[in-house]
Image 1 (cartoon, rainbow, N blue to C red):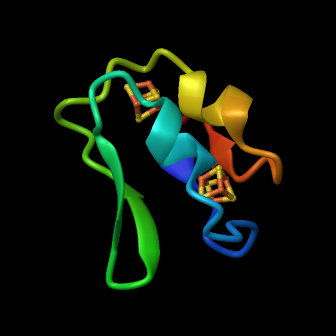
Image 2: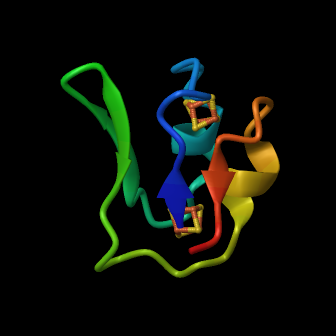
Length: 55
Ligand code: SF4
Ligand code: SF4
């Protein structure tokens, strides 16, 4: 999964929904820790700004 930073409004909906907490805010940027990501797509579905894409 990839976050399109230009579209991200830092609402943190994706952080709340991730079942394994591999998406988080750090230094004012929302990031995904790819090693633990399940590619479940929950974060992408939750994003109101369509800022998360499959790679
Ligand atoms: S795809 Fe799933 S596991 Fe990966 S960051 Fe998004 S919600 Fe979390
Ligand atoms: S849900 Fe979308 S807009 Fe909100 S913090 Fe996550 S990536 Fe950014």
